Image 1 (cartoon, rainbow, N blue to C red):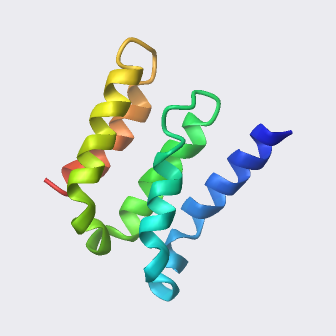
Image 2: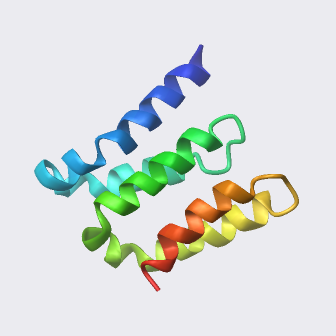
Length: 101
């Protein structure tokens, strides 16, 4: 099923973001964009938010240049999930962004 494949791929990007940070820093932005493109998919939100948190934690210094992009993603995600029961996911995203502010 395509949904399981997407969950697995998103999970792996987040899980290995420390490796990406150390050995393939030139693809950090690609990995970030890949994860963020799925933040508004409710079927993938748990995996996506975990991967988002992982990449922000592992690649913090290298993502500082993406501050505006991340802030934009936060507001889009907040507007999308505001009236739904996803507070824990928004908390993860807020946590990641507060580090950049």
